[in-house]
Amino acid sequence: MDTHSGTCYAGGQTIQLPAPLERIPVLAVAGSVIPQGRAMRFIGEKPDDLRVLYLYPHQDEGQRTSYLVEDDGLSLGYQRGEYTELYFTLTSTHSNLHLEIRYGHHGYRLPYENVEIVLPPGEFRPLQITCPDGLTATMQKSGFGREGDSGV
Image 1 (cartoon, rainbow, N blue to C red):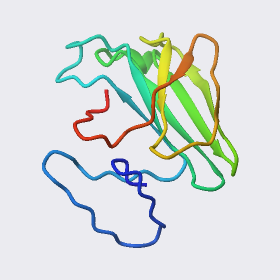
Image 2 (image 1 turned 30 degrees about the vertical axis):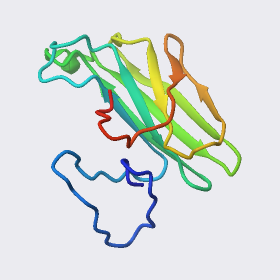
Image 3 (image 1 turned 135 degrees about the vertical axis):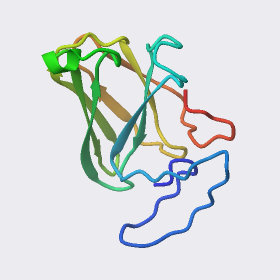
């Protein structure tokens, strides 16, 4: 799926996409969950208290698990187990979507308690979200791919 336009392409082919200077063409595999934080020029420029999960569900049916590893971004604490793994399993059926978020290793306190969820334009299947203790999720209006949208 083209993450800007929402256009889906079958695998196993070569495609050409426009690549204007202001937007890098990015394709996501069906079922992917792509986390994004606040845009910063360097760590600590702004509070690191936001995660947006962009969901790219299968058009029909399917399941895929993605994961994110979080740490403080500054120290070598990850070598001592001071990191947290978040697993995102997105399941798509003909009639609904389910996102399960769960912890893997949990040795770092996340700097956020909520994740914002964004679905692609035109995705109307209802979404059920399951979160682990200490984490909540809220829906944003769909709309990645808007002109001038920097994500977060």
